[in-house]
Length: 124
Image (cartoon, rainbow, N blue to C red; front, side, top):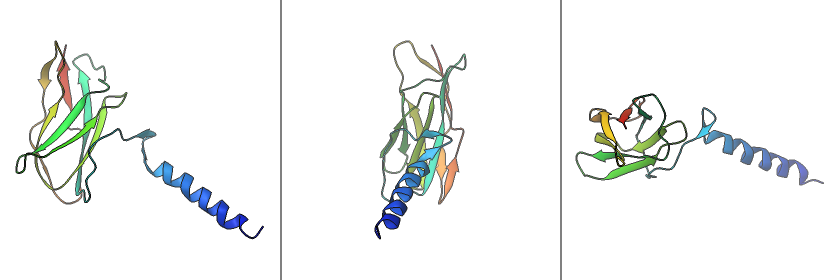
């Protein structure tokens, strides 16, 4: 009986920790894991008609080290990549018949940056 309260507290903490990994009700999909991320790049991949593209690999490539940080788009075409500070070239996976209509410019990440709306548009 005396262990009931600590066990209940532990269960509540574990459940609330799972909620902390959610973003707007959706989990952050895949991606590279780095020990000390200092910034985040996020955005969407759409067709020219506005349809989200799920399952596309998005890469942030360091212009200094050429190291790649990646994520896979979710069902709404969204992605999130944690990266160390630096300058990055953004790329999205192209499939047969795809043409890049809008490619984001190089991105500069500093300590604590959250660069949202780094979006791609793909013509099909």
